[in-house]
Length: 261
Length: 311
Image (cartoon, rainbow over all chains, first blue to last red; front, side):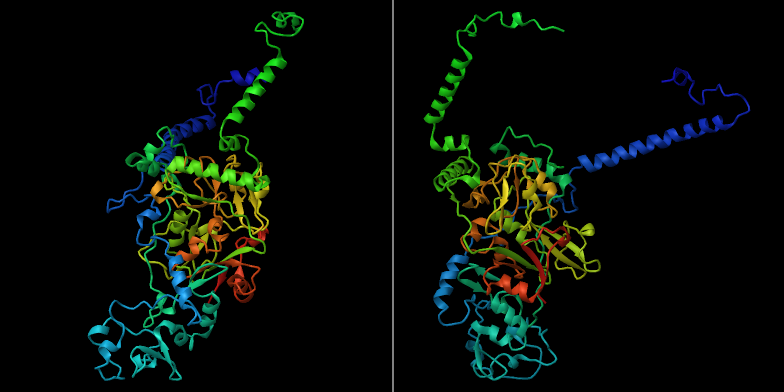
């Protein structure tokens, strides 16, 4: 503790002996620093405010960008659990075939094919398909393949393997497995594709064609479900939700404490 | 400074009783008898709640009592009758999970199916699964991973997607740090939490290297209509405020033999679940035949959650 130090006049107080320029320089410098420091502090405050207290960002469409979506917002995806009911039906059928699979995903009213094709002579020529099948664009080894390589020319309600054996649509995995052997092996053991049901009991398989359009097999892209709410918006989103709905009534004394961090 | 003892004992006579006429022994006996009387008078469920025992030391009868109390509590809170399973781990079962990174398209169906199945809080939002978008040019790189991606369509050709939830480690750092033993590994490998025992200190959250644990900062809000009534004591029953929660491999489904909800919703079949001990199960086949890795293997957490490339 030196009392001299505390009573010493601060530098740049005008008591500098004339002729020394060092302190004049520091006066000029500190004066220049004040507005800089103020600006810096203000900017920091503004940035801090934006980060901590920002309201949810409103997108051009007017929707709140950080709304907390739940499964209830997508009833078409998260409906009732129908797996068990289906499993029993499939288990009953399973005696006849090797795998319990879901029914083929036919377009409504298109099967049996023979209801139209009975009167149409088979045409093996490569051509744009008319009327009913105009939506089919072949993107599946299209250089080497055309309809009748997989569909049977005489029995229109069956598929046809490379050896000429008939394969029903319900067992189309046998047709696909001719070329895609590794996928077929993985599918049978449950590694490729989806199985639902019991990990230690009956399971239901999906056919290859439930996920892969046989005429254009690459998996179709999907719209992703909404992203999670960013932490800095959780509190604002929660308050908005609690204000507008029954959530607030459930727990009126509830403090929406700082769960942003 | 000397203490004047006489002033403190001024109101007492030689027997040590105070002016009210009650000795310390008499007072404590009376309090004890009153407390025992109150406890004996209330319902067995209330008694169970008050004299709560550690979950792993409960006898089967006490476990049933616990389940009954929790069922009543859920009914009081949501006005809905629910099943509260207490099913323990089956012998000869060692669960594991595998996720095919070459298939996952990042559609987030699993995230919301999990929220629905496990009764997570809708407000504030809690999600057990986090899908990370990573650039193919960088590989698995948590520093630049983006969980907030929202393009029109997935998959993006320049990115791949890595969903992360609880990895159910064989040497879990989270259970090691819990000061009260509220989280532990069950014999079938599922890391569970007893929400009644958790004190909310969040040590496990900071110990978890995968960010898999989530904290209920407020009482979780969800509608009774959206409540999944198929519950497990250690799983998806509604949580109180101030406890930690996380993925349990859908313990209420898995112990009954069913696949977890995320497995059954996945539109590309990237999610695989099964018993490691079954040599014909999909998990054994994947570990035998595919290129498998675990996240942050250098931490020696030995996860039961494997990632693999199915192609």
